[in-house]
Image (cartoon, rainbow, N blue to C red; front, side, top):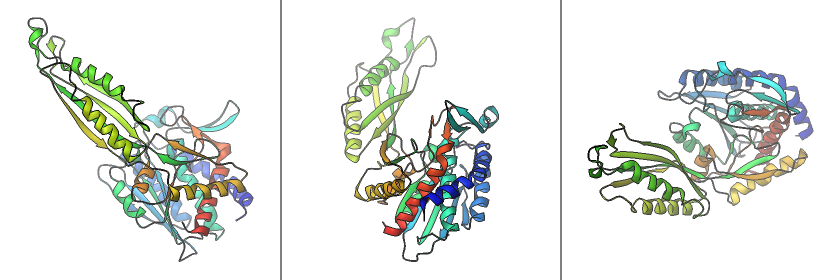
Amino acid sequence: MNVRQVVQQAEQLMEQYLDDLKTTVNIDSGTYTKRGIDRVGAYLQERFQSFGFSTRIDRQEQYGNHLVAAHTGNAPQGPRILLIGHIDTVFPAGEVERRPFAISQQNGRHIATGPGVLDMKSGVLIGLYGLHILIDAQQANYQSVTFVCNSDEEIGSPSSRPLIEELARQSDAAIVLEPGRAKATVVSSRRASGQYRVEVRGVSAHAGVEPQRGRNAILELSYQVQKMQALNGTIPGTTLSVAVIHGGERMNVVPDYAYFDMDVRASDQAGIKAIEAAMSGVVTQKVLDGTQITLSGRMLSAPFERNKRNAFLVQLAREAGSELGLNIEELGSGGASDANNTAAVGLPTIDGLGAGGGLAHNPGEYVELDYLPTRIALLAGLVEKIGDYKV
């Protein structure tokens, strides 16, 4: 397809796109707001069907339902392409009432704001509209496209990961629609993400009468916090952050229990092994006799590492971008996404094909509206090139 024509078509669809964006953003759909997520999924199901997709609902009890949309292309021997975009957000119920979808000018930029507008309801719609343009032009040069809208990515995709892995094993390439950092960026690697807990058990005692009989769990824990944090910078590609801490119940009691939770990131498997070994070594170095220290937890995702097959998708994105006058910048990210899950089963993957903007997970989250037609055209161009080359 002529890429300029694709941009023009995307521009003509902007009013419809923004109506869809407003509707979906104005539904509270935090990960634990199942009713809202299911409303967003039902709305998107109708939109996919109107664009010629078949759909099914993967029903969930604890979390929101997952939507799976599929389209059969014009190339029976072509690639099977998997697109992924999540419809949950990090915001609680009631957030929409406090700050609904809005369009404004800010520092010379034309932006949209609202809960989940960037991360990632705009990205889901970029995928939908990019595919719609290809299908409408009869340029669906792939065997099939499967589009997963999952409901629990913001907490690590506990219920959707098996579904994503199953579909990934049946696909030839994956495109994940997490936000782009700017007009001309894609993401080609992400760190693995893990959660770990250090617990200290001490001995309680009366804080005023005989404190010497106690073994203060908080005191020991404070030493552990410092030693864990000191691991930062010692192992390439890893970071560790003590994020939650708890200890003590009463003012007049020497606390006998305390814990902290850590967020741990690693860029590759070697880094995972090294940071886990280092953490295990730290908890053997107690300062207070009579205390017991335990470490628990695990990595929740595998690293999405840059490799030759993933790099080939980046090259195709660069080719598509070049036709749009863009110099595509390749980025890595410390945050995990469903790209980690597709890459973990060996599927060539590219991420960051969503909208440009900033401040994800923040009340100031925004999307750069002027970028949207170009981002839609970039997605359409990438899908077309994957079909031409068959990854």
